[in-house]
Each structure stands twice: as structure tokens, then as C-alpha cells.
Length: 230
Length: 335
Image (tube, rainbow over all chains, first blue to last red; front, side):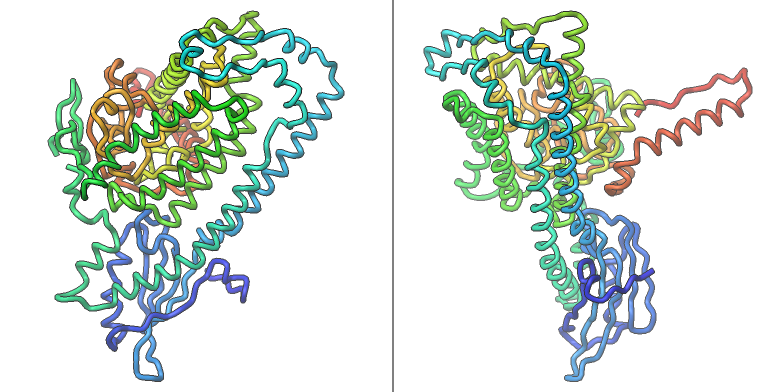
């Protein structure tokens, strides 16, 4: 099922084209791309000039790991050159776009819990703190550490008052993560289509001999012999 | 595949594993690169210990420790880029985003859960129930000794929890998703089901009283050693280091696709625990994961222990109900 939502679908969808280095028909172009689809969990079919593919949870190093479904169409341009037009979508990009909302919600939850804890603490009798206050006399450093010049430990009694206003949870990491995911999304939205174009261009460029073997190696490094691991 | 005999076990019969230090890879490049990637790890470790040992009290804060930890991770990401161990472990945008999601869960959801039912809460309850004081005499020990004790005590707990996860099926169900990772990168330590991450974080250190500075030094030791467990960087790790400390070589063996190899190298920081308890296998592996390297997505990671547990219980009940009473039922082997 393909969801079409104009403008909004740009969040997770990428469209573009790659100029074919030499004029090719779909029958010539698609076999060159074939290694990209010979990976576990991939299904695809070719209908005339259009290849439609879908990948279910591809391997980490799969060249199309981010764009897990889409179409590739070979089209002849007016200037006589051939183009490969792609229209691909990515669940990973969509989830990454939504991730800041999750972390903002977690930050808000932490603040709510802090407020709730504070209210509960204010309502409860203050026995707990009294118990804590009488414990922990000022610790002494070992003579070896004194000789080596390590700073003396602080008196724990002094430190306690400074900490009183802090809540149980610090929501800042949650907000930082929300920002981080926004940054990761923006990087991915630009980087991944660029990498896709590079992959398609490399697959379609004829090299000395036939490129299909080298494309296969590019597509899935695990396919290479594990000489280094032995 | 024939494998190599290590003690009573055959390592590498199911998937390639390099056993021993003789044939593992070395840093390739000029003398400066060789120097940097040979001495980077000890220099950072001793530098951090010296920093926390002499830092003024106003600097000796957990928040500064966290900031240093984040900066260190960014630096290590750079090293992964410059000197990767394996091309097949190269960090991609999607892998990075996925890893950060798990790191994020650790900083938020797990912290909240930990505050209510974590080891601190459990230990306080035990101490209150038995009217125990903390073992306060530890604070009189030299700082570095305290730090090493904190680190080793925590790692001892982690060792046995981790070993338990590989030997008792209910615990294994929580840990299995972490073994579906197919490559090592610095944030992969955070990848796994939250139940497992909660369990592995439990420690018994709370029974002892240490100086805060000793905790910071212990944290620095943990950071400057155990972070390398999951790193895609080729180091010429010094011999003494890999004898005492866990390394990515050890941990890659633990994550290999070879079943026997996964039942080794359980410690997080001190590989010496594995040496003492006879579970250490020196070596390295590139092919990692389960089920031939099937990647597990976030959704499956979250529900795997529960759905697999449900399936196992259902299958067990079915067998029990269908088998004649006289049949000797064999329980499922522990993973």
C-alpha cells in the first residue's frame, strides 16, 4: 500500500533521477541493479520500464537499508539521454522525524513526576531527612593520597543543602535527545538520498569487464570472503 | 568448519572465529598511526585517572563526568571513521540513528525505572530490613584502590548476571536481542531489550561506602575500558591491557555467530574475571549475530522476550498435555 500525501510525504519520501552514463533500455539497466535486490528479505518485480521493490528489515550494510520500498523507472529524456527516476520511501526517516516527540514527551513526564514527588514530599512528615542528616561524618583521605596531593573530600553535611531544590529526574537529557534526533533526521534527509544516487550511479556505470560482480560486492560486504576474520 | 579446541570446548565450529593473539589483525599505516593506535587506550585511561584524582572538588561532579563521557564518544566515533576495524561494521546513518534511540531510552525510561526499583532502592530496603550500616571502612582505603574495588565489584556482579543470561532461558530471553547486533560500534552496548539493560545495570556496590572521588575514578576506568567492547576501531592493544581488561577482540568473539564462542568473555571491564572463572577465549571475530546475521528491528527487540517467552510456555504446555505420562520429558536446553 502506498500512501500519497503531497508535501507531507516529503518527510519520508525521496524522488529524483540519476542520469545514465550511457543510453540503456530497462532490459539493460535493471540487471545491473539486480545485486542490490539479491539480499535477504527483499522482494521486487519489473513491470515494463519500472522496477518496484520492498525490503523487510534489511541488513545493516544493505545499500538500500534506509529506503526500504520504492520504484525505479528508466525514462528517456528529451535531450536523448536516459535517466533512472527513483521514488523511494523510508520508515526509518519517518520514525526519526517522530522521535523528538517521544523524547519531548519523556521530558514532560519527568517534570510531572518531579512535581508530583515534590508535592508528596511536602505532604509527608520529614522523618527521612533527619535520619540522613545524622549519618556520614566528614571522611578522611588515606595518608598515601594526602602525600600525593589529592584534594580533601568535602563535608557531606554542607553539600546536602545545595541539592534540595533539584527534582528526582533531570529532564535535560530528554530534551537534548529530542534536539539530537531532529539533527539526525535533517542529516539523514539530505545524506541518504545523496548516497542512494551514488549507489545507483555506481551500479549503472559500466566498468572494465562487467560491473555486476563489483556491484554485488558493493551491495553487501558480507558477501565477501571473511579472510581477515580467520 | 573444524574449529579450535579451547579447554574442553571447540570454538569456531559454526562460524569463523580467530582464536589466540597470533593471527589477529594489526593497525596498518605509517609510524604515527601505529603509535597513536597503540598508545591511545592507555594514555586516555591514565590521563582520566590523573584528572579525577587531582580535579578540585568543584570539578568533581557527576555532570562533568557525563560531559567527558559524551565528548569521548564523539572522539571515538571519529576514530571509527578514520581507522575502522572492519568495513562490514561501518556505521551507517540508520545504524547510528537506531543506536542513539537505545542510548536515549537508557537516559530517560531506564533512569526513571531505576529510581524506583533499581539496585539503590533494593539495597536500601535490604539495609533497612536488617538494620545494616554500609561497610564504611572502605572510605579509609587509598583512592585508587577504592576505585579499582568499586569497578571490580560492579563488574563481578555484571559477570555473573551476564553468565546467568547465557545459561538460564528466562534470562536469556531478555539478553537475546542484544546478540542480534551484526556489527560493533560504540553505542551498541545500549542496544537491547530494556529489561535486560535494567538487569545488567544492577550492582552490589551500594552496600559499600566509598568516597565520591573514588566513584568518579571508577567511572572513568569503566568508561576508558568497557567502551572499547563495542567499537569498530583497530588498535594494537598492549598485551598487559588485553590480559587484564576486556577488549573489542574479546567481545567480538562473544558476539560471533559461533554458539560456543558466545558462551565466553562475559565481563564488561575486567576480563580477568573470565580468566579466573575459566570462560575467557582470546581472539576475534567479524561475522556477528544470530540466525545467520538477521538484523532485529526496534519493535522486535522490545517484544521479543515476551513473545518468545509466551511461545515457549505454550509449546511446553502442549508437549506436557500431549505426551503420555510415562514419557521422560527433556527440558529445553539453555541457550
